[in-house]
Image 1 (cartoon, rainbow, N blue to C red):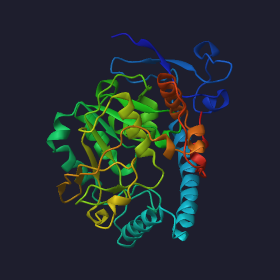
Image 2 (image 1 turned 180 degrees about the horizontal axis):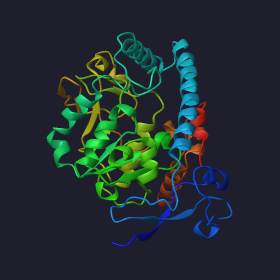
Image 3 (image 1 turned 135 degrees about the vertical axis):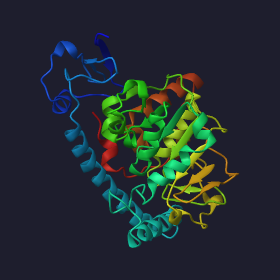
Length: 358
């Protein structure tokens, strides 16, 4: 099969100087069209018969990963400050969440139940036995029959992403912290056998994934979500505290890609199971889980906690809205459709990574 010219349209803004840094080779401006306000761009490249990109234009994984790690470090530092501030204030409604998170992070480190990257604080922990938990997840009937699986981009769920692609399913993965766009979708047909493992990494998603927008017609059959702590009796779950899993869920709900019956699964270490999450204190946008997979067991929570019904704009700060383009697009779209303005919630201090965008 002859190579075919594909035109790739990014779903996020690209600035010329940053784009140049992420390409190994010079490129012709005839292949790149930039609008005056630099809001969109197009890059032409070729793919072979297996769907793999050729070297006409190469994605600089080293530069991408170095920048991602640097910005993530700044985000964790900011989250640590937030944790300390909210934990000090006994009246802060989020203080109890930080108490549980910090206890689990400390426990995993103290018992050496964590893998790279470490320390696990202010991360979805990459726990020992993550691959075993992923295997149990892949043996579930809901996974076997799923055609499209949404999986979080964190390290402990990398094997779930691999098993999804290796099983011939569509993989939907968000850009970390929604920083450079929205979701990317990957299919095994877009990859060669030698690139499937690479495509399961953050850089690989950016390199091989197809960006999608809010108008994409897609049905997600299963959601896999990372957790810091989860209650097996109620399905109540705590993430690392930034709220992006909830935003992703809400946007998929608005798109019609999911509904209340779409199963939500988390994979964690057994030591991340807790019994002291007061589910009555959870917020309306917190996402409960239906199934928990650990290295040793599968737990069906039979949760009675309601699942979110879209984005709750009164819980979303103006700062986060201003820095995530896809949220602004969704808000404007809903306001046009409903003919009324949506009001945001209280202000917050954003981690530096939320401000980074191409």
